[in-house]
Image (tube, rainbow, N blue to C red):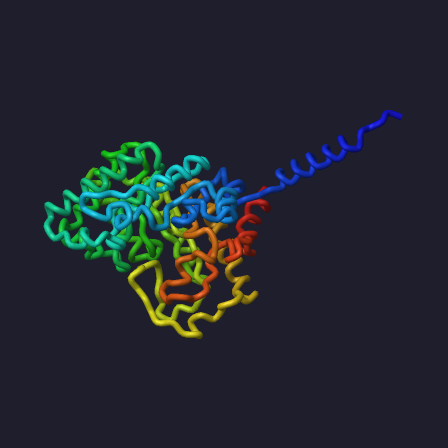
Length: 369
């Protein structure tokens, strides 16, 4: 009988187990890689890789990234003659290092402006600001950032134009100018209009009219970003589907850019993501401070499954699905519209463990395969 070294057998067994484990590893980005990008929004700490466990989760599950805050104008352009690209440079480098799709958020937005920007009243000064701001930032990352939210949240819920500082100084022409400036700075980058509630009929009609106007005036619009700050029961799957079809009919890409699902009570019937809305809290408004009840967990599972089933149905029209945050513990919904609540809107819990909602999203692909 030929002698077989037991040490060699042990090494072979370990290698076999490791290879099998790797083959069995699944992630959102892997199972959906042929359908659309699966993204997440990164905080400053995550961009700087301060928590190894969080960093490992991001790299495993996602192949697209958006900066949650650090590319907004108050951070990138704090003073008229001063830009700060320290964190945005790290953000772009992070995406490049991990071979991720990199989305820039956002160039023109009425909120989170630097204080000096809010004081601009003259149209000439506003034009100069927009030209300098957009050209400087887009040119800096030319060929490195894959897509931009050029204008964010320019509409009211009834579909009319928001009376922002940009509208008040320049009129609706600022929208066309923003897209033209971004295209000139980087002709190859994809340019998006991004907003919340634009799956609702009135605001959807306003967004469609707006995109048509921008394109007719020579602005380049490659896609629309539907934020997707949704609730367990609304908007309906039917309205979301209508939105996908109607935006796609414009000849543009559809992205879901800030997806999360609140499970907490909402007596004011708030929809979307107006960050300026704040309300006082109470125990009644924070019903699940320790744990989400099984009955609500089940609703969240079913909601995510129905949403992703729809996304797969229209995967030929959808470019990217991005969750607004990596895990429940960091979600902005813990502080909006009431500060200090405990919400459970994402596929990963506060301990970074995947939830049943995560399983329901994966299962859709496994049953098809």
